[in-house]
Length: 312
Length: 77
View 1 (cartoon, chains in turn green, brown):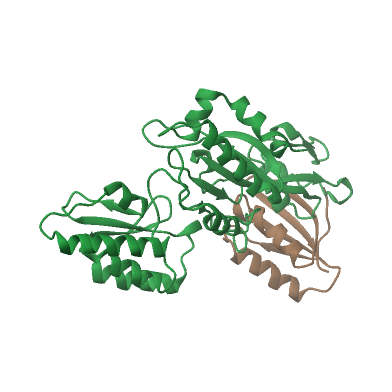
View 2 (cartoon, chains in turn yellow, orange; view 1 turned 120 degrees about the horizontal axis):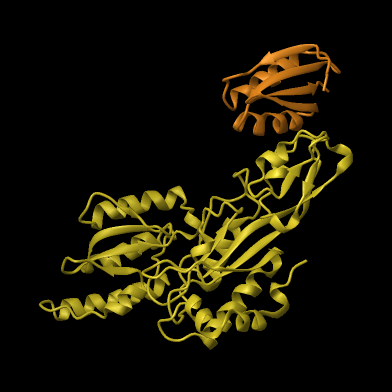
């Protein structure tokens, strides 16, 4: 991306110097590179790629330097999808800005009809609720799919647990960590904490013994019972991911369809590949995958995905 | 439930993580096998302290609710 961007802007700059009076710029091409036209003439907001919202301090420092050099404002904006945006950048400074960011590996993001920068929650390495290594997946998605042209924008997101901080329900494709609990009677002391903490009443304490009755059909696999249990009587039977498809916000929001639970992590990239394949084949220009599903039918998507979305 | 205990610690109004730290320090003073009663508030304290004490290697014997508080019984290991 970076090299291409630099070349594009060298070309643009040449144009600029040749016809200094009137700038002729292909705005769609600029948008592809993460340069968003502002109200003000020749000024752009430059969107920077921060996959999973994890921004190394080295890059953060360089962004601060570059922004104070080339932005006509005294701030940067944090986008809703974890990008850093530098506003009020003049078109003539694009190539210098891109080059200086590139030196520390900081790349410009993308806009328009393509796979966007993946978003994710803070990650299971230090978040006590985390079930899934969302950061690992976000970095990998960024490497494999970022910028790939689609019928419309395509947003992928990862949440570590069913609190769903990364809003997988509003994304074109989302994965959210899940853990299925199992209970061992012999170690249970009947303390009733699991029933108190269960957000969906999937666990009810026995009136007399205090021991849990588990209703798996109500379970959302959040693992709170496992987390609270003071005797490890509740433990993980299996961990995996819930898969959500076709969510979006925008003028007409759509909540994603949850199409699978407890999918093991080694299937995630196969699911992304195949979903994109289905969208490329069945979608129409300027149609989000959620609308493709509305038009074509969710069952057609599920049929196409086959065993990939089956779970036990 | 009627549990005999050797020491008691009232942590009403003590927030996380200080309630855990106080429980841990109290257990350090006690002899192995002795039982500590801890009074904890509902919400975060009762959700966090028992598990953390268990992770320190002690044994949780029972948890009982009374009003909007809880009695936690821990055996020092």
